[in-house]
Length: 294
Image (cartoon, rainbow, N blue to C red; front, side, top):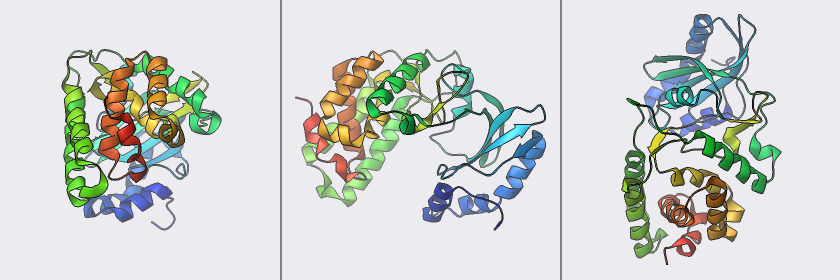
């Protein structure tokens, strides 16, 4: 194990995790990666650094000389349908998936490699990132196919709302009770409203958008759900901390306009999500009252 390279973020995440199963899984990664390399006839390089928290991801080349990416992930609830989402998008605005192998706690994907692979976050200023992210989302939102496996957004929102209530019980002074109640009610209620349902990315931000040759920008690491498109611009805004703190309503209006969404609905979603994140992200607490519905 000492000679097998691990991404820094994966190491730190596992160290903080109480799951003995996940620690065993990391210890088995050399064997798992070796078997996948044999299965798909791959030459596999060192993993990308610092990497993600739940996956071992590295450049690879197959017998035909294709430059690919091998993603070996600990199967987790949020990312369960990544491969199915990529199949639906079929390379339009997203990386292509060529092979999938699920074995117990391991989900392995063989993906298109983006070259040069520069992140949108490192290549562009934030206002330009807004345009790229919104443009990609408008292409990716589509009606889910018949018989699709994707979960409704309401399931994720209910799950996160329950976690918020537990966290707030441990830190009851984190937020004004009225704002907390209004925000979590919206977070549960908005995904239940009768709006057009689309296949969502749910975790799209500029670090998950890479420069490529086949298209200028391609998304990676989607966490697909089906629901309200107005939800899908939230993660990008949360990653634009300085602008969000300076003018939360202005940023919400900008992203709504760029993505072709209703301004008021995006602001409501941003208020609800800011409340939901506020216990674990204290910098959001001053933002919450400025987004509260008027």
